[in-house]
Length: 77
Length: 154
Image 1 (tube, each protein chain N blue to C red):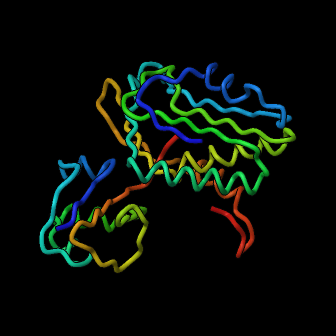
Image 2 (image 1 turned 30 degrees about the vertical axis):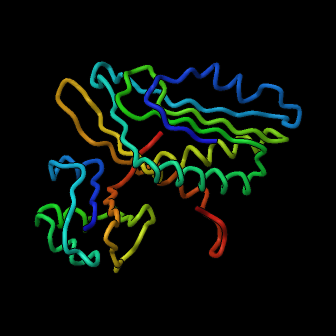
Image 3 (image 1 turned 60 degrees about the vertical axis):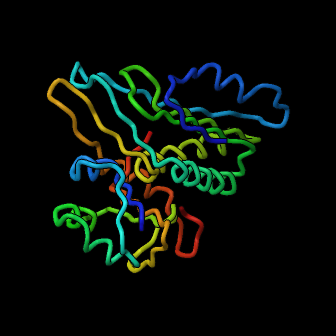
C-alpha cells in the first residue's frame, strides 16, 4: 500500500489530498490506478514526484509504506 | 534556521532577535514579502507546504547560500495557511562579515523561494480563487544565479 499526497492545483483537480493505493509495486503501477484526468495532470509540465520525501525521475519502486507526493509548479515568497 | 508557521510574523522581533548579541557579523540584510491587496482584487492568500519536505528543501538551500556567500547566519520564516493583505508571507535575513555577501545571500534565497521552494499559493478574491504560478520574471531572476557547468548552482 502506498500513500499518495496531492498538492496545489492537483488537489483541487482530484478533489482529495491524501489517499491509499493497494497493490502498487512501482510508480508506473500507481499511475495506472489514478483517474485518467489526474494521471494526465501529474504527467504535465513542471510536475515533480517525490517518493518518501525525495525527488525521483522516471522509474521508482514503491515499498509497503511508501509516500508518493505529486508536486505541481511551486511558488513561495 | 528555518521555520514554517501559520501565525502572523512579527518582523521587528524577528530582526531584533536575529541581530541580538552578535559581535561577529558586520552586516545583516533582511527581506520581508507582504501580501498585496491589488485594489481589492485580492482578499487573501493561501499558502500550502509539504510538511517535512519543504523544511528540508529550504535547509539545503540555506546551506548552499551559506557556502556560496560566506554567510555567518541565515533565517527564513515562511507563513503557511491563510494570509490577509498587508501581512507578511516570508521573512529572510542574512548575516555576513561584509554587506555585499549579506545582500547577495538574501537576494539568492528569495529568488529560489519564489519559484523553486515547495510551496503552493492560492489567491482568493471577489471573483473566486486561483493558483499562482511563478512569472517569467521569477525564472529570469533565478537564472542570474546559474553558474558554469559543474558548479554549485542549486
